[in-house]
Amino acid sequence: MPKYAMVIDLQRCVGCGACSIACRNENNVSEGIYWSNKITETSGTFPNVRFHYLPTLCNHCSNPPCARGCPTKAMHKLDNGITMHDPDKCIGCRYCMYNCPYEVIYFNWENPHKFWKDGRPVINGGTSSPKEVAQTVNGGNGTPYSNPERAQTLPENRSKGIVEKCTFCDHRINVGKIPYCAVACPADARVFGDLEKPDSKVNELLGKYKPYRLKERLGTQPNVYYIRSFNPAHYKPTKGGV
Amino acid sequence: MKAIKIQLWYGLLGLGILLGLITAYRVFTTGFVLYAKTDILVWTMPIAAYVFFSLTSSGLAFVSSIPVVFGVKRYQALEKRTVFLEIAVLFAAFTCLFLHLGSPWNVYYYLFSPNFASPLWWLGMLYGLYLIVILLSFRKIQAGNVSRGLGIFTFIIAIATSTALGWLFGLPDARPVFSATFLAMYLPLTGFASALAAVIVFSLGYHHFAQNPLSEEDKNLYEDLSKVFGFVVALTLVFFIWRTIVGGASATAVEFGGFRHMLGSGWYHLALWVGLIIPLAMIAAPSVRQAGWGKVTSAVLFLVGMFAGRLEMVLSGLVMPTGPKAEGQPPFVSYWPTIWEVFVFVFALAVLLLVYTIGERHFKLSETPE
Picture (spheres, rainbow over the protein chains, first blue to last red):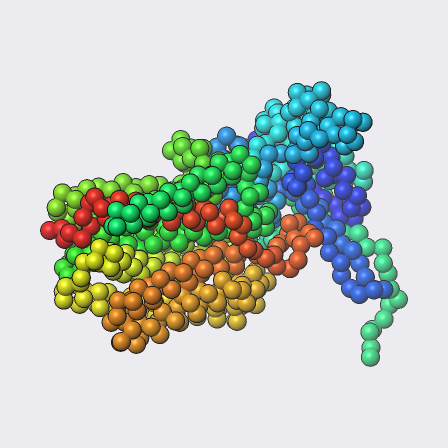
């Protein structure tokens, strides 16, 4: 049985956000919800200042606090290591959000894709309303650009009152493809693979560089690894004496 | 005149329930955007109200066990009212929980897809069992006798529910402000204190509104009860102060930032001053403690403060955004309940008072079972 993992090479990552856009398109993610996200921070004071960018997604932990706390096993582990969510069993208690130390689970506070349910035209008498546009494409189900392939393992659009999160694009993995964020990355910063295969690319990278995972001290054993970092800055060698 | 007052009372409770039903309709059609919840504040006033009511119900089981389990017979006079209050308060807790859950109709998966590792699953099952046992207990009492076996069982379940709530809050290692071992002591203790306050308010309230003067025996009993209440409030204050010192003053981990922030909030000060210090000062003064108004006022103030304390406790682990959800957010997010969240509390309170009023009118709660 495979055990899937992702290695994110921060030396290659340019912080373009293509992963997040691709994720939204592939998984029909609604406004305000981020299966693929980022942590940014600025360090230093101008002119000695830097911007740091860390892409984030569900870590598909081997010891997931979200699944441990879920009372109905709506949040559960698949045999291939993916942390999956079953919306039919979700009672909307948000205990998984409370337990997740990585803040990567989102709740549908209202019906998704609200914009595309708006019956008011942008220009009165001049344009169609978002609702009319959505109606002509797929019967008003979600957005006009909704991806029907997502419906293979999850509802195409999740409903209000339940949580949702990254699934490593399990519907793509099932047909031999890789997560769409990895496909869309223009810098090949995301490498997806099977940790059970000794010669897989993920194992090669984990052996070659010193990887780290987020909040490892919590014992959650994330399966998203980070390697290297990008920093073109340099300075003149000095002892720093006063 | 009396009939008009009762009709007015029922009308008021009906209004509270109507507001609650409108809230339920709006929440389940429009969504939880009606609440002041965000991706950071995932739990707010409805869950704090649930904690408040459910712990009070568990605490009432401790009070009802004083005569039944520990054989202190003079408390037998409180037994029937206390057990009925357990039921009424638990209904209020379930009302809050119902309006907290996004998809409450899926709860049947508790039976078909149980997760034994989840404190939330255990809590759900235990409270379900608790409801059945207290309904059976009351049926026995209504028939005129008390079942010691059911009393012991209720006592054990009440310990399990109130301590399991500590496990529930303390499960995530990423939120050390919720210490499971601390909460497993603090929550049953404060539940017991809330229950004593509730028994004082409802019992003396009954004597006042029914114009039924207290006998000398009753006076001694309530004097005794208010002393026990004062002792438990003092213990609560000690735990409250230690929580403040450990989590607020001496902790250095960044995860305690939310609690340190809450130390400056109105909720915290309401819990400390209105809920603990003022009631304790009132009970410590013999002339105030012995007066009926003194007992009821200190108990009501404690309950108000305890509700604020439950909210402060829930918020203290959530107000500091972390990870990707901290993007574009201030270091601490602020919270003020929306009118819909207030209606959830009003709904729960109306359910409690309606069930209790029906019990008081039809089940003679002042009777002492054998």
